[in-house]
Length: 407
Image (tube, one colour):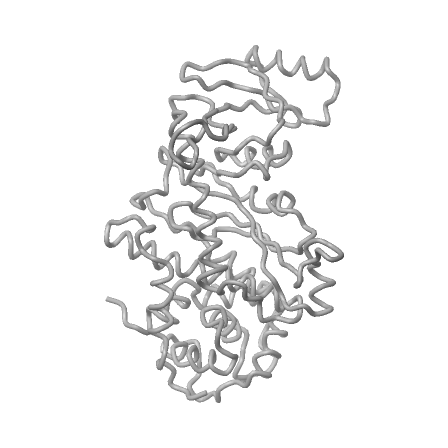
């Protein structure tokens, strides 16, 4: 059994151990400037995470809820006086933008286990990549760093941070992310997470993420891909397979000569090895989805996969695996709607602090989904059956009144 304190702020200390924070601080070169100061970097890191757990509270209230619990876990000196709001702001400035990103990098490991339901495709871990944006305060510094969506009369009311994240489909845990300004397109930011794919994983992606370079980058990791093909992509038939799917060749669009493209197609049909800088062999799965009334013919879905042999994954398994991509939307909703709150902007008025805060949000979402996944495994149920909103309410309610130090 876990105590209420462990369920509340303890979930952050469990998912983000002190050692990981201290290592991140050291790597980023952000040491404690004043010996004996009440807001050393590790405390500031946990307070920043606490801000995300309690977005409705001001700094002083967050400190009141968090520091008592941190004392129990050996991360706070009970002799210290409670920090003021201005003191926390200055400490966050000293911490900078890099530490929380490094913390996330160190703690956001695989959550799913072999027994996690809905997490696997033929023994391969299912992942999804997708993006979302977050509003930040409309300050001159944030506008210069992140930019607005649109322009003129159609310009967004607030500057926007863009995030592209890699998510475990079965647990909704964020595993890797890239954070940038609005001008950085999703496809560009995605390159930073595509290279994180591993050999025992399958990455699903919508058609907006496809490019020849991105496919090659992801395929080069040795992981498997199930991506929706963009409209208008030329998919010549190399070989029709027994299950009705077919092999195609994806040719670098920079190769425009018809003779060279024909030669690559002939080489693929002959079974010759293709230069990955020029072309990739892929398998195509086509299916349609009934209309919303449950009958008739709907939109045609065309999938590209690097799993070439039907014996390794049937067409229906690939279609079902791609459908799991929508679990990424659930992860985004957990962060933006339940954890942060609908329509709410970030607190931070400076770019360094906004990026720091964004990484803290990602880390808190990871901590909560890890807690849910472990609880689901103990109960032998699908993590989807453990409500994120209810878990979040329990965590927040359990934290109330746990502080040893009054605000």
